[in-house]
Image (cartoon, rainbow, N blue to C red; front, side, top):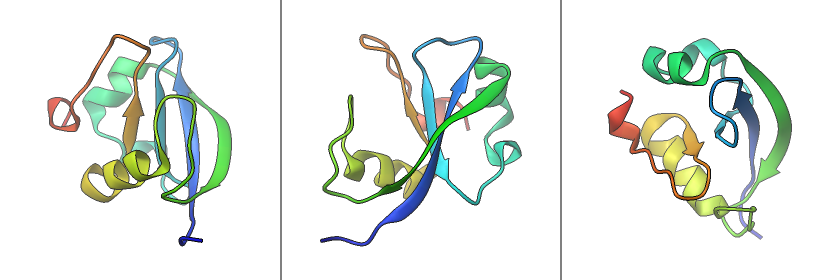
Length: 89
């Protein structure tokens, strides 16, 4: 079994179906301002212990953990919508 990372999942009021995964010990203020503006008011919907081999609804644990390692967060968009991390940095 691979090492786990505690992750919190946030949902924004302005973008239904969009979720942001970030380290559990990070603050919303750590997200880029443009991303916070896009999401609007956020609420935490879940906190979980994530491993690379875990399968989530629309992505894998490795996708999320790689996004967090590169950008400090991972954005899951609704089906058919995409966002690059460098678009909001």
